[in-house]
Length: 202
Image (cartoon, rainbow, N blue to C red):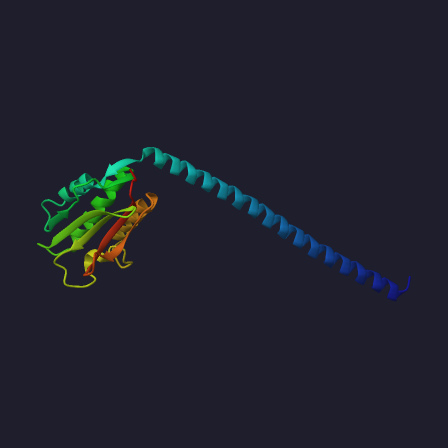
């Protein structure tokens, strides 16, 4: 065998080895991606199953709630604090389908926040009414002079860690019940806080 033939044979072997190594890398990468996808799919199924289980548990724990006595109870917690309360509730029941303990927690957190940021002697107006298919609760600082008073800044990112955690808890509870809580005015004027929940249809 001549030197040229030997060199050509070695070159062919090297090329074949490089191609095989490349194919091996591609196959290995494909296997890794396949395994990762299988694991992600399993995790996604696990999360979905857990979410369904939690939703079923929440549904089982939910009951028809008239928000009026819950607001009265939350407002009573502000007794002895530096703010005044002006509670405006309709004569007819405003019913939602909710977990009572969680709804009480949300209302208590908003009341506590209001008491901590409003000036001493200011009046917190708390109103509730049905609006179409929603129950609406609104908190407003009647003595606020700023169009964007501290009460409406509950969801600002600049709050302390404790306040931010409280705001996130309220958003989470509202979301779990198919509603939302956000900063908004009520019929014009300064901003306050509004909670909207699906109204329980008779």
